[in-house]
Image 1 (tube, rainbow, N blue to C red):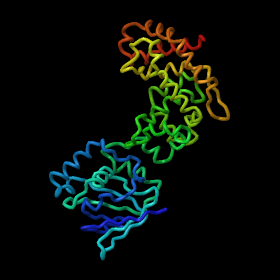
Image 2 (image 1 turned 180 degrees about the horizontal axis):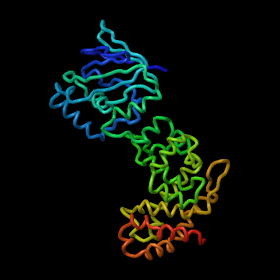
Image 3 (image 1 turned 180 degrees about the vertical axis):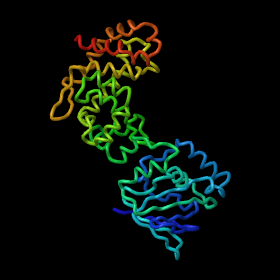
Image 4 (image 1 turned 45 degrees about the vertical axis):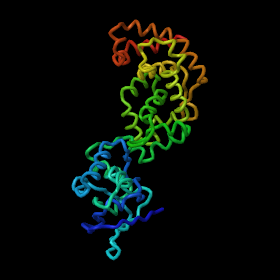
Length: 341
């Protein structure tokens, strides 16, 4: 399906085959619906440049174009209608603004007649090149791998595997509104990935969420993390229970908490420890072999043993949680505690 868009111009020219450049009044973009599908990184009002552009429009609109790099669009086709003084372009679901999303975001809300903006339209670009072009154009900040994976549809399996409530809370790409980074969700799920024991998986994924995302990029739906899809939400539920349950907090030492939340690393290894003998492969996917409530009960029961292991590390580690979590002594202690039940 294609969408046709018209924008009035002040000046327009065809500079090369498949390449139109024009200037338009900023007000012509106000409430104008131009898709952002071509750019894996979506604009957000939290971006520092949004405030600066609004201030520029208010204080010195005539120089807005000179201080702004403009907007770059990828389209299926584009023409200049000189009689009507409009540029007409057509985009599919993979096309639209590839750079300058924050400029569009600002002008779509605050565009005024006295400011101009430069727009370029490129046609003849294969859909599979849009991510590479977006990454090159957004050279001031490297495109996050999360944005790239989301643009390529490689998080769809996650969205299909979790509830609507959890999906709404996940931040899948730069500019997304969720509060839970997709990388952290997959780090937690990776604890039960096939091929290695849960403690070994925890060591690998806690230290490098990037490795999980890179594996997904390279191997796509054959990546081992995909095999956790049936239990990904259960894993997040257990992780959050360990970190935030009030009754459980009363059983643990206060030194492993900050602002009523258990430190991530401590919770991460406790989860890996309790699942050591409680996961299996079923129909090609990872499965937890007992009920979640039983797992929670075991964690609560083992709290005293875990406290003892932490205290045995000594004050040096107790005062530096990151050092404690990174120590083999702590990790091996967690492993032994849960193998003992």
